[in-house]
Length: 482
Image 1 (cartoon, rainbow, N blue to C red):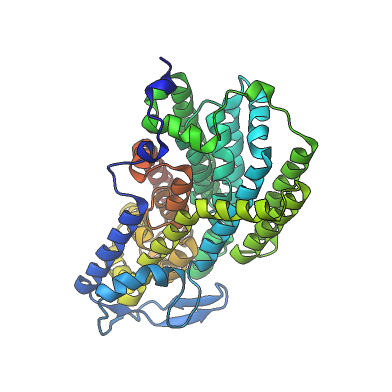
Image 2 (spheres, one colour; image 1 turned 45 degrees about the vertical axis):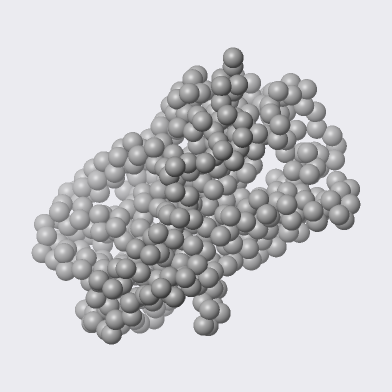
């Protein structure tokens, strides 16, 4: 009996886990944060417009307690909706990300209807036979470049459904595919060098040039990337040698059935038609245009969604799918990612509850009080752990920078620590947490697309988190002493 024959074949059963689903975890966190609004005193800093940052930031020394606004039963039920948009002002929260995910799903549905992706995967595996392992460092470097330069995060959701079938066909597991994208881009954000959504905003809020401390951040980037590549390659090699050592071994057959559309036994006979080649060229150009638009033209979710919508129509016409098959494939593809879109709203709902309960500034004020009068090493390491804790509640790199840097960065002057080190501690803490953060839509969304449960992801990544934590601590401590 082969390994695959030993594994169950029902995807619905295989992909089930005794560990709660992402929906339950996130709704539980909404309830937890709502409970905290009854226990933590409400408070606020005064805000003032910072032209460098382009938004209002907290003013140091202005914290004061305010009338509490504890979040109750109705607020908890409203939180998922409020995660998408403010029901009072109709200002968008995460609705743009959710719509982008649905358009992306429709685009992938149309591509799958052409058969180009499935055939292309088989063809690629035929040419890569024996050298598949080198996909891992090459792709992780590319994602890390996106992370360190422009904070590539939500954009990565577009790549999971494309890369995971390739990785499965190469003999690895779904966790390997998720790790290449999530850890690749994540380590780039952790070691942000010129990322405008993390380093630049944080440095501006701290009142220093963003180039201060860039050498230390390059060390974090390069060293962290080498550690992560080695970790993922080692895991992938182990899994390919012995599939039972995969953290998702019980889902192996189910993942293949879901992502490879019937298996990988026809790899050697795969031949792309001219129409499929054209579809794949348009497919690749769509992603290239997306990266260009985000990195240089200021595009965000609405324009990205429109790009995928337009590309789906073009591909459907070129492949001569016909009106009914084109629209049907688009709707089916969007339906496949509907759960991911819902997860995004739930994750944002946690932040909404905290903001409405006005406890974020109180937590920040407690951090400010804790850091006062500490020696250099103790100061920078406690700063790192404070930012780690705050990142769970404020996963957005720009949001955390605007919230914490105006208050915490000036404290570095009293501890004889450079403000650039505070910025580095902030971005490395936020990047580290966002590799596992259940309140971060990119994490729960990527895992949902990859059909990897949250507990299995933790089982895979926790040793890497320990290694990275030690590495970051050593780097920022040495940087403080120099």
